[in-house]
Structure formats: structure tokens, C-alpha cells
Image (cartoon, rainbow, N blue to C red; front, side):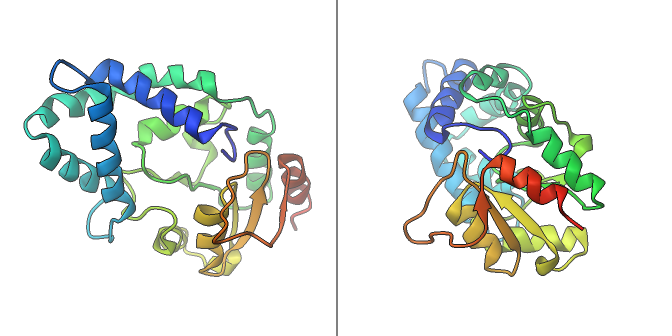
Length: 225
């Protein structure tokens, strides 16, 4: 929703529709698959750092579905480089996304794609390819294989700082979600900029700090010292 404009509900609906095409059979209906995935996603969101999000997800999924897990897992693994591309149809173009990432890099910053690590790395790379970006454009990309926390847990942002070898106050978190991005990152001392083009608001944690359109973000990055 920050680099890649989308309606989150529409994206999730299209995602489940495409995933069901490869993972469902006479034993598991699309609605059942959706319920199981949400339950296992919760296991990632509540992960305490003792295992990767990938381990948390599949441990939970295996407990729910039993032996069917061994059939479904390889199908899901392959999904992100095949039918997942069909979900692009519900996203929008953002010609400024690549410019923003390149500007930050040109200013000497380490640029991290800190998207919620609920997807495999292949899924993360596929999504950014839709806006002309690749893994090489970032210092690193968070994914369910590499991370053990999720937004809005502040530990997720702390772990990024630790990998970068920087202090939170030396970072700028750019996001579109008041709770998962602004609230969580600012709680550990990160500077934050809320992109308002596809903003996700939160009544409990409204953001009163710096904000603006993606064009405003470009101007900010151009003026970085």
C-alpha cells in the first residue's frame, strides 16, 4: 500500500481466489482454506521470536490440516512465482516508487523493504516486480523466512535496526498504516512519514506526525542531507 497502491480488502480477496485454484481439492474448500490460513497467519502475528514466521505458520497449519499439509505446502511455495502474478490486476501503478527507492540509495541511505513478513521471499519479490523494483534495489527485504516478528510488534523494527547496525532514531520509516507503521515504529524512536495516497487509519493510534502524498515523499527524499 506504500510503494504498491492497492485496496487491501480487494487485494486479499484476489489473493485467496488465486491461491484456492492451486491448493483446494474435494477435501478442502476455498472457504476452509481461507479460515486455516487466517488462523496460521495469527500464529505469525503473535510470534515471540523463538522461531521464524515460516515455522510459526506451517507448524500451525500442520496442526489444523494434518497430512494434507504435505500436499499443500509445495503448491503454496510454487504459487508465488506463478498464479500470484494474477493478483497484480487489483493493484495500481506507482511510477514514483522506483524513484523514491533510488533517491534514498543515492543519498547514502541503507534502504530496507520493511513490508510485513507474512509472505515468503518469492511473494515479496513478485509484488515489487509489479512496480519495476527488484531485490537488488534494497539492503534487504523482510519475509517470513528471515523474520521472527510481525507488525505492529515493535520488536520487528528493532530487529531491522539490529541487522543494519543502526539506532532507531537514525532511521526513517515510510509507511501507509497508522498502527502497523507509524505507531509501531515511532514507539521505538524511529522518525516516520505517513504516505496518504492509500492510507490505513487507526482510531486508537491516529498519526499526528509528518505526512503527505507520495509526491511529498519524493520532495522530502530529494532534500535529505
